[in-house]
Amino acid sequence: MMLGVRDHIQESSRADILEAAADCFTERGYTETSIDDIARSLGATKGRIYHHFRSKADIFAELFRVGMEMNYAAIEPYRALSGRAATRWRHMAFAHVLQMIVTRSFQRTVWMGVKMHLRGATTPEQRSVFAELITYRTEYGNVFREAILTARDEGDFDFDNPSIANQLMFTTLNSPIFWYAPRVGETRADIEELARQVVTCAWRGLGGKDEQRKT
Amino acid sequence: MMLGVRDHIQESSRADILEAAADCFTERGYTETSIDDIARSLGATKGRIYHHFRSKADIFAELFRVGMEMNYAAIEPYRALSGRAATRWRHMAFAHVLQMIVTRSFQRTVWMGVKMHLRGATTPEQRSVFAELITYRTEYGNVFREAILTARDEGDFDFDNPSIANQLMFTTLNSPIFWYAPRVGETRADIEELARQVVTCAWRGLGGKDEQRKT
DNA sequence: TGATGAACATACTACCGGGTATGTTGTCAA
DNA sequence: TTGACAACATACCCGGTAGTATGTTCATCA
Image (cartoon, rainbow over all chains, first blue to last red; front, side):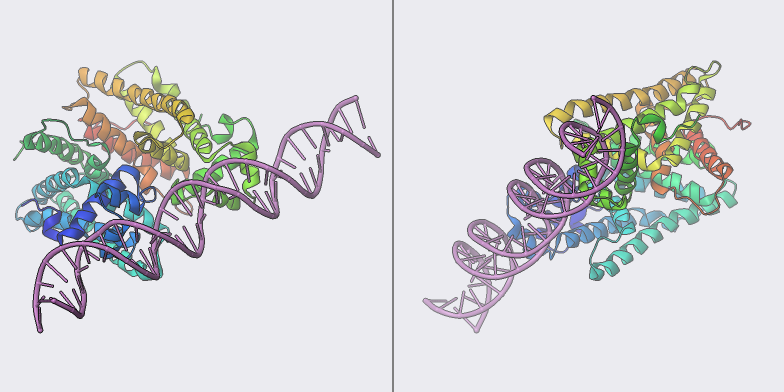
């Protein structure tokens, strides 16, 4: 159910590099991370990386794509859930937050990618690839947007400006990317409890009434 | 009441440079911004900048300091407010969000500064200055932390883990840094309405009951 | 068994950007 | 009027880094 990187990449050599790159980017940022840094963290050299990727931006784009694919896969089981939209939202939100925590190095890269797109810092060729990825991300956002709008119509949510509400909701749901750090001896249940609190906070922020918690 | 950069800087030449730097950092990020970029946006050259600042990191530290000082100044009138802690929190939160919006280029730099400190990317000399600024920021955070804890004791707020609640609260209150963009013909009232919605979202997230809105 | 190509490592180039060293101009005081 | 200094501009240095060109090793298959 919770798919990892391996399930979204063909060759494992590429997956190794992507994981290393994601860790480095998360730790030091995109620009501050050199190709040699990534290679060193793999116990290898540039040659290995440039054998599998054409450029640094290429690695970034692939990270972005895989990150988004994992997000889609995580909420897929709940997208078409029947019943109240608010309940559907809660399931999706919970899956989303879990995904943010578990694959946070990838997610942080995705988040940074949006900033990068605002300024035009890639080659014109890469630009179209990037625009496509941004569209991909926007569509993902719209899945949630549609859910909270329907939930408001159904009387379960209560907020003013939908755009602002959506922004604030995503800000909350994504925030573990920045402040979550794994604890020693942390169990799956601990993480789920954490995710639950995050979802509850977002739920309340949207104007949802406190209800019996569902697993 | 809402103090700008000029009120926190002695010489105006330094203030000019800081504002230009803040804009560039916000647009392109710290590393991606070169000293020449900042100089160019001022219609000047490196010489001017290095005449007033010793290094790029120095500009950054100064930005951080000024940004934090403006934050403190913004909430100062409400810190010692008597009455319910929840009401005090609401006033401080509103002032904070307004500050995030109005001085967002500075605030974004401050935010980035926290990340930068987590990895050790400055000279040992600069390190102590930086540590001090982080402390400064932590204390600022504690003002809010104390407020929400008291408010919970007084029965106005309702949340589980205080650390998580505090993180999520700040995430929400700070979020305009990232998604706010000034609209043409936007009035002060528009911005305040926006801030109100952000504060309300955070308020609800903390478990506060919806009440009559106070100006 | 030898040829071929994948999967790397090594060595090198080109360039960008932080920082410095030095020149230039205006101002003000003695 | 001159000298001294602030406030810059110009020219230059140099380390780091993306990207390339060229080995080297090993496995596979004709």
